[in-house]
Image (cartoon, rainbow over all chains, first blue to last red; front, side, top):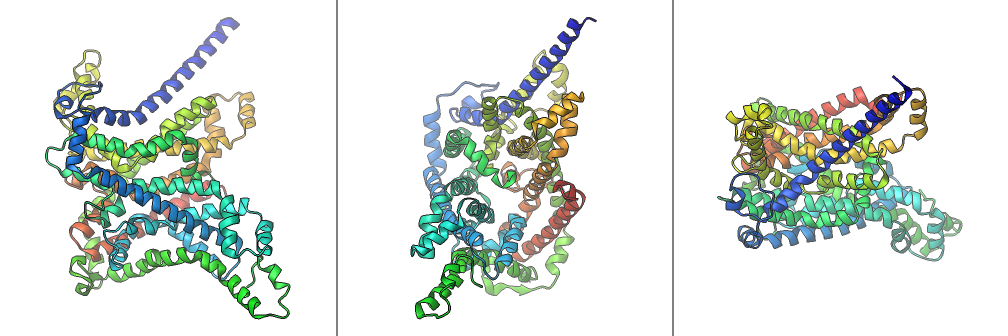
Length: 284
Length: 332
């Protein structure tokens, strides 16, 4: 075998290898994206066109009819609004609470600091299912059953968020700045609000992503405490129609598709930040 | 007692006036003020419940009848739960599905990440965006989509399999399926674990891929160059350079998978229509806990099951950390 033949074979192998890699990566894109595309396609079909046999990837023309059915089987926009207001309020309050706690842990020395640290780390390791029953009992005892407060308040003190903010304070808020602010006569609260918070913007953005995605997608806690249709969140409503006889699946897929659109739209405009935010705990 | 921040005030502490006293008091309590939402909410929703759960697990209580209906039963809840075959069955289901979905997650995520970092930044960005997409969508929404795709009579999966079994070019491989189609992916106890595991796998592969991509980015390019010069091919570079250095990331990713999978609730709940289908094999321990507490309204037993679950997860985690923790955390 000449030298030329040898390099040819090596190159061929390399190209083949690259081809295999590319196919693997592409197939995986297909696997990940297909269910979303499929649900969007089904959203335009009704029972007859859906079940007509064979595999049909064409868009149907039943989307208006499906929309009508969707509103008949569930109070769709109430669910969307409930999910939205819970996610927005919960996220906003958690930014406040987590940044307060994270700031305190980063800047002050005080009695009980280590204990609080320990409790936070410990609480991160407790699986959520274990706390479901006591969560429900406390909610009922406080008279918060079937209120939106019950679904967001307990999650506003996310220990992950507190640690994240603490890291940001340590890394990006110089101690001199805090001292200067106090020498200028600013109160502790004012220092936190006007000096520290603006510096924490990237950290707060990361936390906001994590909290919003969690609250929007959450199912378990709403399932347990929200029981009247006017309070239910969208995940609950979607799952609720499984019990409807002769479920109009086209309508359900339309609802499902619309319900994931807000996050997907946000994701497509800021995927880098969202991926970084949602894996922040992992990659650090 | 005095914080670093307070030091400018301390200089004048020799003769203390009223306002200074007030200031010192404020300085001392400021951190607690900032932490008060955390302390209050965690106290109410985190600490108190733990003690209440211990108390509750020794009682018989139906929440519908109010707090006064609570009745002391000693260890009965624990004895009943521990001898309940359903508890062990659901725990086994959880474990099987955790392995069926968890192991492939990492087996796919590692090569995906390895190939991804070989791509140009633009391609890599778009591929990562696609792979990560399932992670941001709600488990309920995607489980609903899969529920429709798994549908026995009209689902796309059975339709594709039927086509493959019929078509000339593929019937040699899929023809055997003809006798069993349509398959009840979510109805059959023999299939439900695979159906649920596939959804879980599908949802989290991208997340793990991103973790591993970040891990690979920490590995210096010089190491690969050195290995190349020593004649290592691309598999050997993966096996002997990447894999050992990725250990902390693998440890972290697997830890998250274990915790997540032991808590599996949404996917099996939706796919089995709240436990109507394939109950025997498809019900996880979390689903069972929900059933005890909210369908059978036996909170005491549910509390006992929670504690049993807590111990089991604790043992698993301890064993895992014992065998892999030292390697994973990179310490000696």
